[in-house]
Length: 487
Image (cartoon, rainbow, N blue to C red; front, top):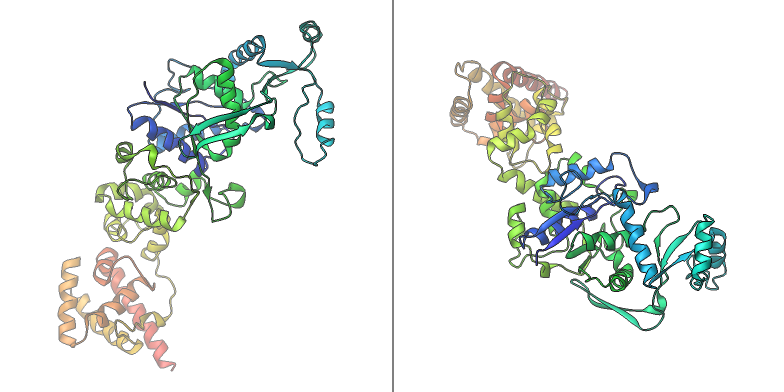
């Protein structure tokens, strides 16, 4: 049997982390077993439809490499793949259940249904439908239909016994049928409900595995009873525990938690995001943490899914992102950051590839670039306290002496590159009889004006060039002289 999974998002806005994880697991279940991954857009809830949201879905799947075998924009044997384009299908299947005695027309008004809710003694917001329309005669039903009365179609649920279904993550789950409401299959506007459309489409598209959040566990008995009512084979259910912000709260955009788009804007790599999300609820057998998507396709095993909620740890993602950056080859890294680097460094005379080489081992996210390199364009205002460094054994007095000693030596240097700068400064250290840091720290500080910088004295001097480097060293000397003369 061919494994067929589907990602069936509603076009209601951004792609949140839980949604992307569902898509990823569905993709991996299919691809790990040489199956098919399908995209279906579930837009039957027209009130929640957001313009442009379908493009977000397409773009996210494309960016993450979760290429689908069938979908709205590429077609397939079981289309259309947008629910609003399948409207005639649902009513036909709902009427089939009516004919089988498994569903019935309900003509109750909103006012009557509201009255049922307010009469609930427990004060709950929901009360079961009282089956007022279940026993209408076929003649009365037809009369109402001919009169154009608004209606819904409800499933006739069993009132006795239990319904049991098996879930890959949670095992066997049993519910009392008496607790189930006669769910609506077709709404008064002619659109199917989410549950009904799901079941019909999954069956017609030959979906073998349904992956969704654990919040749908309570609805699954209704799905199972629908399959039973039609005489269809139910798919394998895979319910995923929630992705949490902390031990007590689920991730939520309303509470400021990140969407996939937010993470990209904050400088995280797509590959790192996908890798990290794969580990939010799934554990590989060998405890490996870094995976390419192709490696995930080979390593993924549905039995590695956990029923425990996963906490989205931005620190862990940041660490993983840094590991991905470090592992890039130099050309790939440069092409990844080139546009950001050009935005951050306006001086076109500087060698951006040399700056990139300094950054690669120091970045955690791509958004770290701008604050790390802004000093290349303009030397910031800084305090001479930066020259004081216990580990380097520097004081303001030592810094001033070192800068004054380095200036004429560097001025005489005709061939300005990192190697000649290094050799010249190392010779000066020997001549002065001081430690390396007592010369190099003051020069690095004078060149960057920052407490830390991507690169040391030689690298920065090479990139800034002779004229700019000497100018900044002179500014450092002036600052230190002014500071020490005021003491």
